[in-house]
Amino acid sequence: MIEAVSKPAQSSALDVIDRCCIAARHAAQRLRGLPDAAKARALRQAAVAIREDAAVILAANARDMAAGEARGLTAALLDRLRLDTARLQAIADSVDAVAALPDPVGEEIDRRIAPAGMTLRRVRVPIGVIGIIYESRPNVTVDAAALCVRSGNAAILRGGSEAVHSNRALHAALVRGLGAAGLPEEVVQLVPIQDREAVGAMLAAAGGIDLIIPRGGKSLVARVQADARVPVLAHLDGICHSFVHASADPMMAEKIVLNAKLRRTGICGAMETLLIDRDYPHSAPLLATLADAGCELRGDDMVMELEPRAVSALDEDWDTEYLDAILSVAFVEGLDGALEHIARHSSGHTDAIITSDKAAAARFQAEVDSAIVMVNASSQFADGGEFGLGAEIGIATGRLHARGPVALEGLTTYKWLVDGEGHIRA
Image (tube, rainbow, N blue to C red; front, side):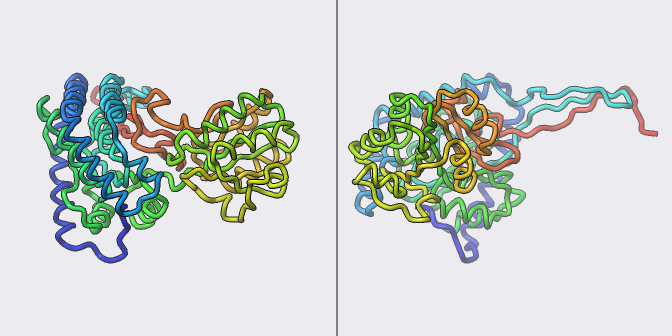
């Protein structure tokens, strides 16, 4: 996985990133002038190229998987790394989906008349050059590239060493497709070196890179947020909660809880803490079902009393993103107790309530201050594709610029256009 640097970047890495930035800036300028149809056509060509190169990409991924197993990567990391025919098809389909989305660039989001009589318009424009630093998910190579191109941005991608062959094969297919449609290859660049100093060089590239988006583990994201001299869009943890309210339908609660935890344990939208109302009458069978499914339960005294296979939770469990078949479980005093626990321990990613009480649902959505707040739905829906955004470049948990799944609109900023008729200021 990518390791953050703690020493000055070597000049060779600085030179490589500097060259990438210069090329990306020129490519972004060319991309800025292209019509919507040209960008969409280029992405469709890229999707075709990915499908045509499927055998090469899957062979490259097999090399990465073998190396990952030899290095002792966890099951969760291997799952993130793995590509198969279905996953690769889904990746290509996501590029087509992004191509079909409305272009946000040029969208007028505000119009007004200034006191002096001029017409003022606020319109969306690309951010410019976006750097993406990520670890073991090769699909990020494609999702990030597609979203950046569609929104008029150039991308500099720095993937982790564990996915190096997969990333290179995917990138080669992408640029072949984009180039066939007339786009400059430099519009999507994969950093050609795996030196970890390249990460530090990207973080220091103020003026060359306009926005950094990290996708990876806590240590990577924390270091990026701490060291970057470039604006950062990220989430640090995915400590997602599901709260089973006293009024929850037991069949619905069981279905949602199992899916939220166990559908895919290694994604940031996976539930990590289950909160259960003390007045919910079906707690024991819910806990037993989780344990029967192979989930390790770490809970409070009431959890261990109801489910003998559970172990005692430590203080740090309530603030841990397991990314594994491990779940923290606590009983709380109604909605107030759930809100208090979430306020204290949530990472602001995704939190959900399962309830048949509309007033409780409304209060939960109003008072939980997370990027995504759900009612009667699995937290695993915290995904740009599932939100109809085509794909996502990441989940943002901050409070500025973009929040939740970041797709096309999140990769734009705006500028003011002023139309006058000889106006001068007194």
